[in-house]
Length: 61
Image (cartoon, rainbow, N blue to C red; front, side, top):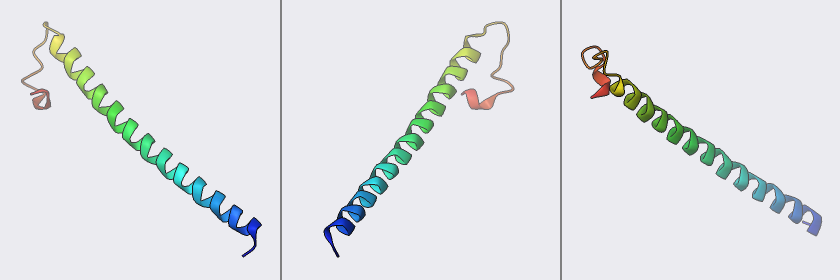
């Protein structure tokens, strides 16, 4: 292999690593966002004192 081919392959390998890391970061951030949204929804529903949601929404407990 000549030097140019080695450099090209190194660049491709590095790009794959960056893309993989980026994909993992997006997946982790998405999961964290969903968890925060779930906590937010739970707190908003529980904060509503006019309606008792505990009877019909078992997942609140």
